[in-house]
Length: 312
Image (tube, rainbow, N blue to C red):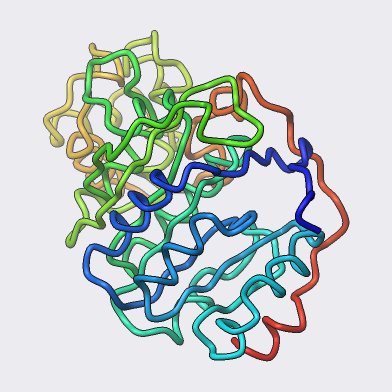
């Protein structure tokens, strides 16, 4: 059981460096106690340190071959209710339900697969009002975009959406040798602290304005937002004037607050209808997150483990 190999189809790179695991656990739980939701415990290197600091850990693991190993390794913690093990896909699991029964503060943490980074960041953004901190290990390129400032090359839709909800800081650069197998990219541990109140509300208008601005980032906003929401040129100009936004600049120069003001003015001047999916709203393609990894393949639908159904 201990010779389980990482699955390329799941984008698995097991964290092996204990010092990195300790740093992540300390960043996620600066004050011992509370509840931690761990995304993808793997073989439990990070789980060990989380259990030392948190009052309760809920771990979501998609790989059903790892479940028996984790049940055996953490039999006592599971029996005591300190660890709850869920066999599920983090991309579709109910994170709120996993956290709600545990004491505060509540934290989300994980060495997340590169091939579903965007999806999990989007879910984390929706959970911002329910948690005190989110700590993820992500590809270095993604971390650069998460903290990028307006009018810089890495700045994009991902930057805007995340910075609208979180204050984001780099915690640690992690070299490929910290993983088994080593990925072909460097990783960064990032700490995301929810902003209360957020810098902007992620309304349909806000999502569509950001999506369109960065889908054609080399165009001026006058062209990128042409006919947005079915608006005429005059109506769009009226919104921009009221919001204090120039239509003769590119979207990459706008701050989170600029997009927010524009969204509010558009909402005031007319009803908003969009057909954008949540993924399209982020304006990001999977290839941006996974230039050196294997595309994710969908396996059979995961079923909750017996341990999870008894404990949560």
